[in-house]
Image 1 (tube, one colour):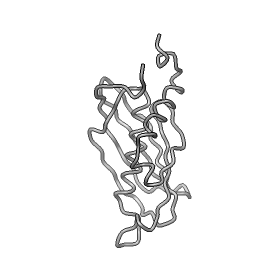
Image 2 (spheres, one colour; image 1 turned 30 degrees about the vertical axis):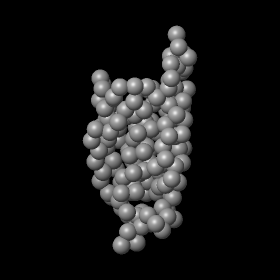
Image 3 (cartoon, one colour; image 1 turned 135 degrees about the horizontal axis):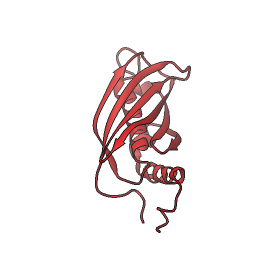
Length: 147
């Protein structure tokens, strides 16, 4: 039995997240923080800066999408199988503003064969719903952790 195979599901999820975080320049550069990870789940947060606002003085939707997409990536990569997004959609519900601290909480809805479905709820620091994101994942060749 390899070292990876001997890990508990929670320890495996945490090791995968550490491995991904070390290589995730985009999430780190945007000031995201990985709050929690568990098998099929992940939570990340990010504070909206002035550089992230648009012509309406609200957070540009692309940054909200990126935060949700990062939470999705960490959630679907908790099983030591390289997994990528196949399809994603977002519904914006309320605006976010400069200074808001957004949290994206991802949870696995379904995981069968090479495909998965994940729902990500994006809320602000007051717990108000900002957006809903659904991601469809697809496993590809390779593992995150060495055997």
